[in-house]
Image 1 (cartoon, rainbow, N blue to C red):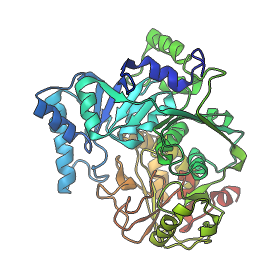
Image 2 (image 1 turned 135 degrees about the vertical axis):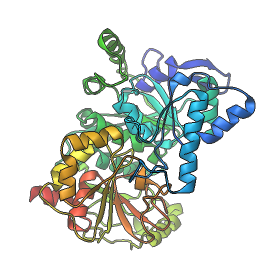
Image 3 (image 1 turned 120 degrees about the vertical axis):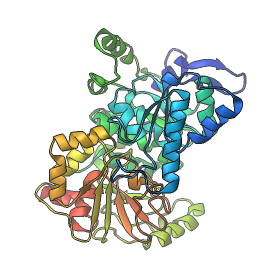
Image 4 (image 1 turned 60 degrees about the vertical axis):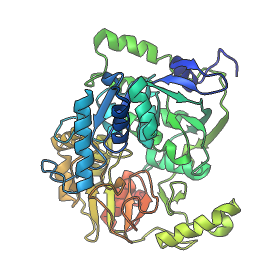
Length: 471
């Protein structure tokens, strides 16, 4: 690659390299470090053991999200381990001088929801968190990725991280999306094409006319699930949609500083003639509502398709895990999922818990009512989303349709809190992972878009939302 033609990823990475180790990794400066209650305690304990503090506490932001209950948040947390982890975060943040948005704070919420909505996430930054879905922030044109516990301690101590530079991949989605197809369907479609490990070792830039037409919240959904195909992270070049979203937010630059920032942000794009290690292009017209049938996000199909058979698999090595997944899910090769009864619907997580998601669902279910067999739970991604939903009357619409609007948190995305799906039950979920036991021991998860989840809740069975939209 010629030195004067750079990808968006290269521009941001190169601007943050403090030094390069010969035949080794780069020392990368980290602009913002986000933490929560799950991966931070060991890092804080490591600092104490070494007798050092947090190097730049003003660059660290904490919230409680994974372990928090989504009902009665004003009461003490009932589950002992969850209560211990949340209390420990509060103690550590006070001790080390870190800003914390804990339970009861108006800015509390899922870490990857509050960063963007507060204007903390800005184009051109490097952002890390001890959470794999940190890639969400890449929607703003940032290099954002998850890190391990030892790396959390490293960033706390130095505000830097030793990282080997990933390879680059660009995925272009060209054309217009059909009615009923959302960004969640785009990313599930991409993962089904590339596979769960198809982007391992790469940082992915999403481009093309279909990507440029998306709202910021839709872009966040796509970047959020980059990790589910093995990517180190995903990003999208910032544009006027990005700048309009950021303007006026709590911690975003104001006045002249905002205009100066925008002038820089406009330089954050891939130069014409820059090359990627790998590039794919897909037609938006080929994307339909998607659903997963197995136990990883790569096991996805168009909702009207049948589950593949062993003969359809490209790799012999995948046959054993394929059959194991179907056994866990209680499905048979060649089955259709349409009309499959479902008792649990979860709308939430750092993938689909933003105000735009809640608006879409409320608009769709208005005047309808969920099926009597369905437990339909909607969990906003933050207190701000919850309050905005109430201010717009979405809570009333959802309640009248039989949906339960809860308080913010990671909730039933993962089995680390009280919101678990019972063993053997099927859950149509807008979250990002369908691993065995992810939503509770023995729970069976199918990943979908918020519209498909809402349609399933209304009918009580897996439904092609386009049928209801056309009706």
